[in-house]
Structure formats: structure tokens, C-alpha cells
Length: 264
Ligand SMILES: C[S@@+](CC[C@H](N)C(=O)[O-])C[C@H]1O[C@@H](n2cnc3c(N)ncnc32)[C@H](O)[C@@H]1O
Image (tube, rainbow, N blue to C red):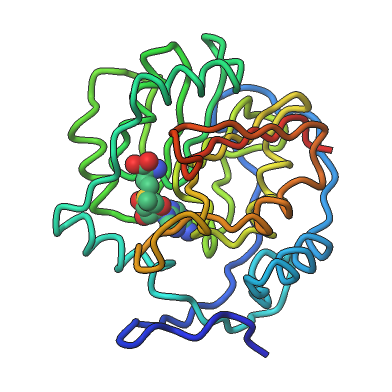
């Protein structure tokens, strides 16, 4: 049974098949792997379903036989390629947003960061200027081409690659316990949350941080194409972390940062 919300009129749907589980390989940062953290994908799937988003049968399960899933238009690279080709641009991170991120994520030079759904790479480039080693991924080829062309001055500190966090096998180079900070700037709402949270907790070190920037859906106009996360979806993020903090990024409280620290 498919629990996804019905598509909007005219929305394109894509049917995808689960891919094979990841194969072991080189650490993304060329560093020995750390400890594997526990995770419970079935519990997350139940919680996410309870938050009204519906489950994604098959997606995120390891060692499954091939399972069909229906994917909403906004969860396809074609949608985002077309958006970027038309000139879509997410507002740049302001100096205030960047400062709050640095404080709340406790950023230190030399840390290893994965930018999830990096778009055109502006936040990733800022992080590289702070001395972080950033591996930035997006499933839109148009976004990745733009990001590569725009941010060429950071050497090994910054790389961009195409990757679909919902449908692709985990990059062989992304090893358990190897990442200090995972960044989801306006991208978490498009991900298969049970799968992604399970993966993120596995990739992070014990004191690692998942940092999310999002709008609060209830405070956004109903017509906005990307409305962020509902309060209930934000609550669902809490289990499985030692600490959760949220902070405001604008006067209305509609733009917030969420810090999940210490996967457990
Ligand atoms: C609203 S944009 C935010 C882009 C960027 N983080 C920023 O702040 O400018 C959402 C991004 O998530 C990417 N995205 C959505 N689903 C994805 C997935 N399953 N895997 C990888 N990237 C994804 C889209 O291609 C898009 O670039």
C-alpha cells in the first residue's frame, strides 16, 4: 500500500526500484572508519508515518528484494534540474545564519562535513573557507555543474558529487563513524526520513551533529512550493539523539535551525 500524499494536479510521478546495499570502500575523507552506531529504521518509519508523511515501503531497507515505490515530483532530480535551469535560487546563507550555524554546530577547523542536497553549493563553499573538509552532494546534475563551476578555489577541502540520498546505494567512500557534521539546509523535507536518519546516525562520529535549516510549514503560506517541516515532523526527529536544540533565524519564527547532537 502506498501512504504518500496524493500528487498535485499535473505533478509528474516516477517509479523507482530499490538499489543494492552499499559496498565497503575507501573512507570519503581518506581517514580510518570509526564505530558503527546502532539504528532502528522500522521504529523511525512508524514515527514518520505517525507524523502524517506516510511511509515509503521498501526505501531504506537493507538487503531487500526489489520493491516498487512511487516518488513525488519534488523528490525527483528532473524537477530540480528544471527548477535550476529556470534560474531557481535559494537565498544565500546570511552572515547571521552562518554565525548561528558556527556557534550551534560548534564548528572547528579540520572537521569533516557532508552537505546533503547542497544545491548550487554556497553553504558548502562557506564551510570550506572555515577550514572544514566538505563533501557536498545533490541529485540534480544541473545544480552540481553550477556548484563546481562557481566554487573552484577550495582545492581538496570542497568536492561536489551527484548522489540521490533516497534511491542510490550509499557512496562506498562514506564510512560509518567518519563525519563530524551533516548539513541539511532546506533539503530534509525532500528526503526519505527513516532511511536518511538511520544513515546519518551511522555516518556521524559519537559526538557528531546533524544540523537542519528549515521553514516551519505551519507558518508558511499554503501556496509556497517548499514549506519546510511541520511541528510534528520536527518532534519525530528527536528520538535517537542525546541532545536536540532549535533556534530562530528570523523575527517571525518561521525559519529555524535544528541541532541534533550525539547519535545513539
Ligand atoms: C531547496 S534546495 C536547497 C539547496 C541548498 N541546500 C541551499 O541551501 O541552497 C533542495 C535541494 O535538495 C536537493 N535534493 C532533494 N532531494 C534530494 C535527494 N534525494 N538526494 C540529493 N539531493 C536532493 C535538490 O536537488 C535541491 O538542490
